[in-house]
Amino acid sequence: MVSRRWSGRAPRAVVRAFVSALAFLAVVSAQGPAVVTHLDLQYSEGVARDGRRNSLDVYLPGRVSRPPLVVFLHGGGWSAGQKEPYERLARALCTQGIGCAPINTRMFPFVRPDAMARDCARVFGFLHDSAERLGFDPERMFLMGHSAGAHLVSLAVLDEAIWRHSGVSRAAVCGVIALSGVYDARPRHFVLERIFGRDVTARAAMSPVQFARADAPPFSIVWAERDIPGIGLSSRMFANALRAHGAAVELRKLENRDHVDYMFQLDAHGAVGAAAVNPAAVNLVPLVTRSVWRHLARSRSGPRQAVAARRFEVKTAQIAGRLPIALFGPAGRQRDAVGWLVLAVDAVDRPAATALAREVAARGRVVALVDITGLPRADDRRAIATFDRMVQGCADAIERFGAPVARPVVGAMGAAGWLVGVSSLPTRGALVLGSAAARAVVEGVLEGGRKHGRDPAALLAANARPMLLLASERDAAVDRPATHRLSRLLTRRGDCAVDLAAPAVRELARAAAAGDPTLAEFVVAFLDG
Image 1: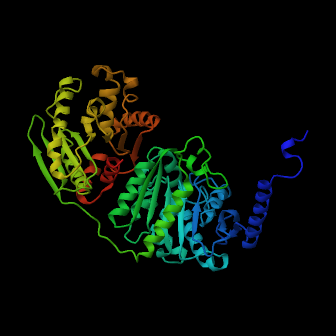
Image 2: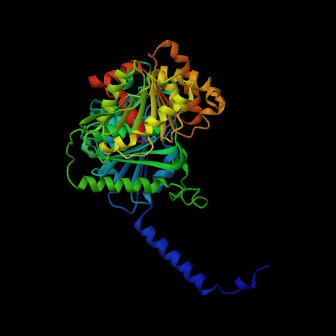
Image 3: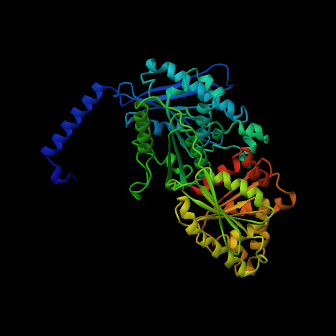
């Protein structure tokens, strides 16, 4: 049965809408297709066994003359993934007037990551040379990668030996958008060991954080609130290293996102699928678009100039009291001193901790080094109360360094580790330095938790503070089982445990005085979180 409302002649409004739609389609047809595609282009020959691994696609907005181009590399743990699923992302960027080239590279186990990074460099050179033929602007080209792809594009553009394979100047890269990447391959992790091997030198040689440089292109570094443990820490470390050389860096943490969801919640128009339910959901396309235009505006302001790495003059102070406390911080009132650390040590670890504290202070943060040698046994409640009172008393003295007097991060090295788990202070986080400190947490807190009035199984679960464990495979063998146990607990909680394939943590702390900043870089990045 036909409705009486629609019987006979169509309403005038419907006719007008239909005519307008036809007129719009006619204009669109005259202007050309919305997206111009060039699929499965080979960017190099005779390298990969499978030609598809040396191919790329180019998507360009059909109604924009010489648009900018974002070269995008997928994630997949260096051993999986391909360009085709990112057609939706490419088309979404085209709606914003930005071209996109999703690419493939060779993958593990056929090659190591340094060879994959060379593929990235070859891709950029090929596209730069093909820009006029394909129809985009070679002066407005960007690199973007997600997860393993973020690592590879960052390594490619920063490592001089790798970038040489592009055949073009590094200045041709207007910016890098790095999403949820790993920028330091030195920490021990089963995935990193499988991909990068166990050799410490080789792992460092494939870590973008080791290649930070003054002439780096501008970076936008992004990670998710619920990302893989360690991604946020790695991102902040990388940003700090770039900034220390004067490079331009933007940092952003995506709230309520995980490692992959913000990459794939796109419809054909670039909208987030959950936006109707959650208006606060993150849309990746505007984020990338804003980064592109900001980087272009920065590049138009003139050539980048090297900025000398900034180091603060270290100032120390002593606080009288039951426990010896030494403060290390930047001289004068530094408004960018973003965090402070209370580090508990005993007499054995104090020299190493002092070297570490000086290096952290040289990077603009404040460390209160508390010597707990005179405290009673770990199960004495009075010891905990004494430590907490001493830390609270540091706040007034901290002001002279210009640091914000807010909640500190509480950390410990060696036998002092038990204090990290039992301190009742309101803190921003907890830091466990070394396998000996991990053993003190396990034996003095987890296994001895009831001595402190807490259930061992619920102790860490009830502690909402972020926690970071920094240990080394070369720490004392007797302490390593405790490290493994605490690492498993922290990973299950979503915290971060970093097992460095390097000298023992105590030796790493001492090495700070000799110019090895490895441990300080991790500590500063955690303080900034």
